[in-house]
Image (cartoon, rainbow, N blue to C red):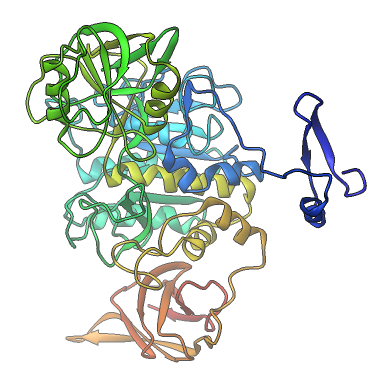
Length: 548
């Protein structure tokens, strides 16, 4: 190992084994007759803290390990507030949490606290881990309150005011705005607010594509100066509820996303250890204790009198599993996932015993190591509190992209918002039709790949594609009035091109050599255009400026 240049971290005479870091050329050690085997030294983390599958799927940990951790970047969350006393948000050193209006540090709805947890839940011994754990600065603008569930709504003007609040809090920092919200009607005032922020080069606005499961545009996500985010599940399939349209730019995990909530609705302790669980909707609210037993799939009742029964998800409905546990004398049911991560579930009615859901990892660990131990289950709702739940929605996908943008900007503070946006687009993992499509946009956001892109010299054009050239612009009129700008260029060879106005991408279009933009600037102003090979930031035409 010394001759191979190995760095030895740990040696065990009892195991005849070493933990080492090896240079690539040391692979020949596998063929040395004195070496029995070579294997990866896998990572182990405290079982009390969960790294959600979604955090790993967007490469957040790899980017942070490479030095992009979100420090010095301000994330402005426009939502229902934040329960700042939550165990995964309180006690952060070196990063701030501020607010811009009354009640920002409370959250009876839970939506804002869930979003914030995905972005920066701290690295401690409890709960979950965020994309930028405890590193980014947070600024909370509460726009939702009231309503039967505490979530309420806001006017478009309220959102425009929130943008001013976010900008005022910047204090020299780059700002990423999270908007897990939207509506179906466009507002010129609102659009102008986002365009003005984007034009500064220091603010990147990111919003949820919408949860109607159709092709309608949702705003603010569908403004060209805002990044629209679709939702995928743990298998990288498009969520059935996710909006799909021409403005979707990126995709991120938005199904069964485990994050923080400002209450405790369920708990599970086995011996002295606590495990993250969620109440199954419709469960009996109460407490129960008993020896932990394995019920398999719980497709039939067993001899479980006085027991807390583990049931694996699958084959039959949750309600039937819980009913079988009760029929077998069980005092509580713990249904664990059959795929990585946790999940949210409903019983479609009421149960006679407490019933909770758990992650696949915790369920398998309990079956393997904790059967026979005393388990205690509670489904009593307590607020405020430090709880965790798995939620669905493009609202849950959006903070993943926001967190990734913050990671990138912390490593490259010299970059513009357009460069951060482009880096995420060109390095996204393509999940649908080749290139951009209306379901996934450019694909699943990838933090480490985007970081590598920013560290390098830019994105080369795809092999064989010749960049557009000889771009010219001219205004066109309708009924005697200027109605927009006509672009003309020599096509090159790409099938699709991205149209940029003043540094912001406004459309992806077929490469026909012409495009009409309905933008009209104020008198005395100008706009600068360029046309690039789709998904490239370097294979572009000349700039062409048009005056109004």
